[in-house]
Image 1: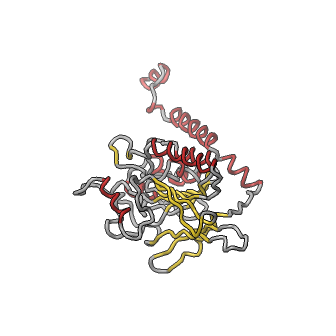
Image 2: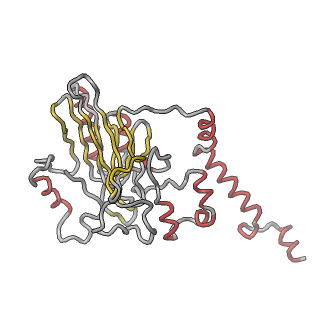
Image 3: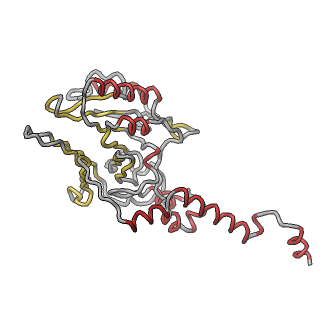
Amino acid sequence: TFTPGNHDDDGAPYERKELLKIFSLPYSISKGAKTFNHTITVGPDKEDCVRLWLFDSGENHPKFKYTSFDLASVSAYSTISEKLHESGENVLGLAFFHIPLPEYGYVKPVKGTLGLFDAARHKGIVPKIAKIAPWLVKLIGQHRVVGSSMLDSGLFNAMAKNKNIVATFCGHDHYNDAVMRREGIFLCYGRVSSRTPPIDWEGDGGELPFQLGARVVEIETKKGDGSQQKFSTWIQGEGNGIEEDSHLVLYPYKEISPSICAKCINALFSPYVVHFLLIVLLLLYILLYPEYRELTEEEIQSKQN
């Protein structure tokens, strides 16, 4: 099956909707789909399967970067989820789209690399403080940036409310291949795998922090012995096969409770504390460097003397 990205119809001799013909190709599991936003089940039977949710994350937009997920499709996801729940379906789901949700941002990875900040620094498109003191930006976790739309479609909140999505998968940010976790949902990047089209759409971001590859998702069925399903993922590298340190069991997930020390550190660098400290630093900067503010009469008189 297929979900479109923001480059699939850039300067193309066809319209975006013509890509729907992909679903009519032989061996397509989305046969008959009339929209990029749809859901299908894959598995040996109705009791032992996984539900795939596919979304069109939008096209390029001059003001908001990308048009984001269609609000009608977000509403349809919620409606279908409610009906499936009412019908008694208890099937876990995986969601696939190209551009990451805003909720991918500013979350510490469980696995993998978030290299988009360093790529943006290499290109020179970060704020001045990030150029001068990148270590400070990384210390407070503000380097965990993602290339999402400026518009929030509400899709993540809908997923968190319906509790039927184990993990989401996206691409788009070539310098990221991390897996995060927020509100019980895994937020996964793939691994850039293509040489054509070029892998340098993001401009002069420097070399990739990893080799080309692909993210693999494996679903183990119940095997008829009463055991539960198992969802796993890993990175298959271009040259060295499976990258062992990338292997992660998504379901059932055994969450490790953080130590008291880790909890204190997380509390210390919470967004509220970080924003407060940044405001204090800004005020101190203005006070210490008068040229960035209007001088008082006493300071003007002192300079004249």
